[in-house]
Length: 110
Image (cartoon, rainbow, N blue to C red; front, side):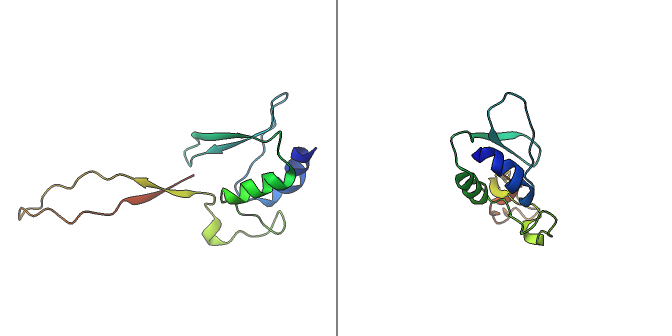
């Protein structure tokens, strides 16, 4: 009943959180990358509604006041978390000097 209350009453308030009903399957939160690759599965059966809400917010999902409330620009891609992307070493320039090393770029995957 706790998970059902979360699904029916809370999911509509979260930006970028979708419910997929799979008959007979235990409820779980499936985290996907921006390319829809599965990153992690978190079982929800033994969690209370409050625990699920806390987990979802800790993961970075934005909770709106009402289901149709606007989402601030900075949360449009939430819950994307920056992950480091390694860069290839740069070749020396025409004058023989190696360009300064660049800092790792961040990639907006979850």
